Image (cartoon, rainbow, N blue to C red; front, top):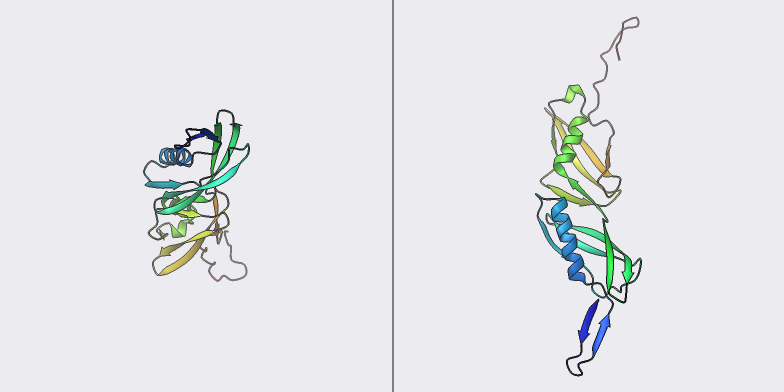
Amino acid sequence: MILLINTQTGAREVVNEVDPAKIADTISRQLRKQLPPVRVGSVVCPKGIKLTEGATFQCTADVAGDQLPVTVTLSHVDTDTGSYEADFKQAKALLDANKVVEEIQLRLPEQAAGATVDCGTWRLRVVEVGGSVECTVSLGSKRRVVRVVVDDVKGTAHFEPATVWPLTPPKVVKIGDKLTV
């Protein structure tokens, strides 16, 4: 609740709007707690959001130089006192390059155990659900691009191709030779 006082008449007026600075501060603190080693910059929330049960709006947080949208939903709104609860959810995934590299390395077959994985210079990247980032797997002179496709806002992803490094085709054999697969 915001209490405005008309400086000319002295009249008090109650405005039942969300305090954007308060919401921004809460989001900032939560992100810093969730991502301690990451630089969390400013958080911007819209002004003029009425205190209404179920009202939803979006704030934007600067996380490691990228813009992370955060959806805010109001509940338990009491317009008499101006109190409310706010639920915060990321609207896009936040990918950690180190975790992406680790996951790709875990998927490498034994024959590519010495391969390196390069996802570029980003440390964290905001990616929408269905969006992707590309990484390159290198082994000697061989290169393979792997797309990391985001499945949900939690950062769950799948890889394309699913087999990160193609298996070596079998040697040419003659009929009657024994093969182990």
